[in-house]
Figure 1 (tube, rainbow, N blue to C red):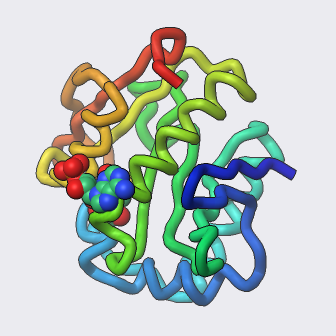
Figure 2: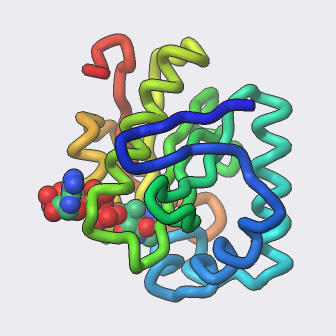
Length: 177
Ligand SMILES: CC(C)(COP(=O)(O)OP(=O)(O)OC[C@H]1O[C@@H](n2cnc3c(N)ncnc32)[C@H](O)[C@@H]1OP(=O)(O)O)[C@@H](O)C(=O)NCCC(=O)NCCS
């Protein structure tokens, strides 16, 4: 079972008890504003998402972690790796993504979890390159991208929704773990 501990966080696979708190996060328009078409997700859609992430763990040997606060055991959000199959022009690629509940913003948790995820990508999975795909308006996410040392690569168009997406990448062989 893959688990990572950082000073304040536990990154782990998903439990049944995560469904309700992740569903609360996914129901918040502020969280979902720049994800997909910006719609919130209900309990069923959240259950499907957890199932998809767990399948990715089984199939690829990496995936999206549940992020738990060590101090309280609360589920704060999700951070991890996925194959962005919805963007064929970027393939082959592995992307890093993050999503936290609003009470957990502004405390450095996303950066702490993302940093540990890049270390995992390099050291455990032997990946040498990871990308991030963001709406250009998503300044909070792009702030994390910059702090990780990811470099701007190109802008593409979302194949389904038509809006622009900023692509950043990092060469993990030069990543300062
Ligand atoms: C994107 C997102 C994860 C960023 O979260 P965040 O909390 O702003 O990111 P960070 O973890 O980097 O924390 C940011 C701030 O916490 C503050 N902070 C407080 N305590 C800190 C600590 N101990 N260590 C580091 N930063 C700390 C810092 O001021 C930092 O801001 P700065 O980088 O300007 O200095 C969050 O906005 C989110 O979940 N958005 C919705 C989902 C989304 O859009 N995901 C991306 C698209 S897939």
